[in-house]
Length: 99
Image (cartoon, rainbow, N blue to C red):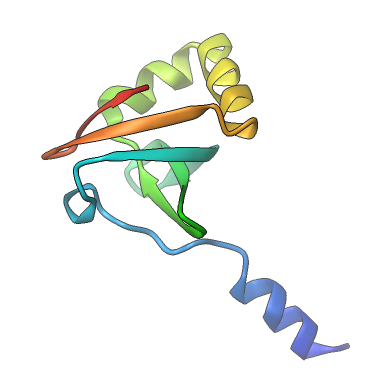
């Protein structure tokens, strides 16, 4: 078994995670939306492309819970994200809006 290839796959699996408070107040392009299960329950993660630098950020539960409940809305957002048509505007203190 080639451990070098396996280690390359493992190291490139997840983009780094950032917190909302670390983001600048501006818009970001969402390239993927993922459903994840954590110790704190079901959550959503946005994968964001910031001028070639990819990172992920956990979506607040006030947004992720309705997306879990409404599959149609979730799939519509995923389709837009896959086409690079979905952006968020960060407004500070964990507040954002889709643009």
